Length: 346
Ligand SMILES: Cc1cc2nc3c(=O)[nH]c(=O)nc-3n(C[C@H](O)[C@H](O)[C@H](O)COP(=O)(O)OP(=O)(O)OC[C@H]3O[C@@H](n4cnc5c(N)ncnc54)[C@H](O)[C@@H]3O)c2cc1C
Image (cartoon, rainbow, N blue to C red; front, side):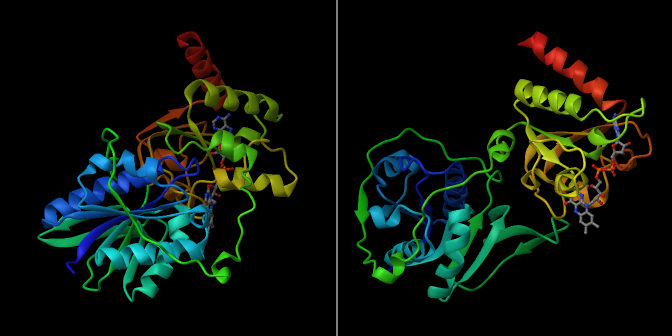
């Protein structure tokens, strides 16, 4: 059986399409297959994969394998790993490219173990350099970039979202080859009973937004009149998020305040925290307000292309080469003006 490049994905929560990250990983897989002169095989997992398979019918895959049925609907390690293993074996996969969704980040490292292969997660690129498959990922909270080549096969590669243009094409009618995967009772011991999403997270974290708006602890500090203005700060920030569609980030000092019984912004949680001990979001632009711009915070801005900051302190971290533009100004005044401009535009 010839060895192949396999793209594997699970359907999204709606069950009718793939997650956005999967179309991006498919784009990377197609590029790699073309550069290596190989055919691409697809493998899909989910309760019913028909509609998702049709959405990628025009991608030009050699074959589409599917493991489907209600047992494969929930994001469960045992069934996901078994399904992915069956697809990899059927495809005699040498290179497996998949989206780094939370579901696959849990299941595919175990798949590598089952196949006696290797896995690399959180990749930021997959490409062919001088004829060799080469991937990159960051270490030490995005401070060091590793360029990795391996001889081990099968090699399973999980590509982070936002790192490759998504494949797009007109839906067609896919010719799907079903694989029957027996599910023993012990593989179904884990039952997903529901999903709990913090309200503030759902409302303010928007990975696809063009702008990341970051609020720092300065919003809750005493202002030149000797008083704090937390309610005003909340209103200004929420108005801006509504008007601009930006995603909300926070500094560690600000998100920690909730646990320290200090005045807090009610909608800010630890999930918003950007930085060394927080997240490293990807957005084309970022605007930081009332945040000092210290290194453990700014390291989380690694993938923000254009950075601007508003701070009263002309000697803040942003002024020392961390931002492209620093406005030495009062963020309360700047945001009120910005909101007025956004309001008049809409
Ligand atoms: C191991 C380690 C890990 C860490 N990880 C993280 C991390 O993941 N994320 C993170 O954010 N931090 C992290 N930190 C903490 C980090 O070093 C800083 O302490 C923190 O980011 C400071 O937050 P801040 O700028 O919001 O608050 P502050 O340092 O208190 O700064 C507030 C700023 O607001 C400005 N300001 C006040 N009022 C106004 C106004 N009206 N208009 C404009 N500006 C105003 C002030 O001039 C000041 O610069 C970490 C630290 C360590 C040691």
